[in-house]
Amino acid sequence: MTASKDFDTARFEVIGNNTLGEFNRPSGVAVDNKDNLYVADTGNNRIQIIDSKGNITSIGKQGSSLGEFNRPVGVALDNKGTIYVAVIKSIVTFQIKSDGLGG
Image (cartoon, rainbow, N blue to C red):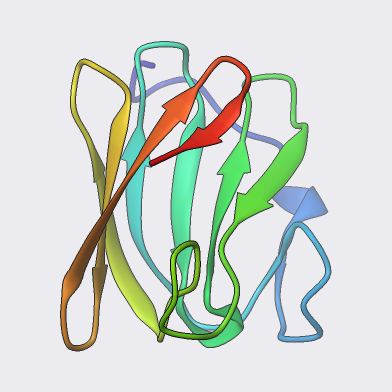
């Protein structure tokens, strides 16, 4: 993804009713090699993933078990597809595979 590539920002609002594409205190962002945008949606306790066509999915929910976050504030990716999520008190790692969320 280049800095000049624009996402349709009119589709996204900063509110917190937990609907996909709507954010509550978004913080960290990352982009993978397929131009997917990952947003740490802090207030909704999830990571929202927006692909280059504008399709939106999310991972996580509030909690402290596997696949749950307590206020994620940062997100990063490595070249193997591992997603690193920084939450208020710890760092949680997930690996996204082509068939869904892995461990």
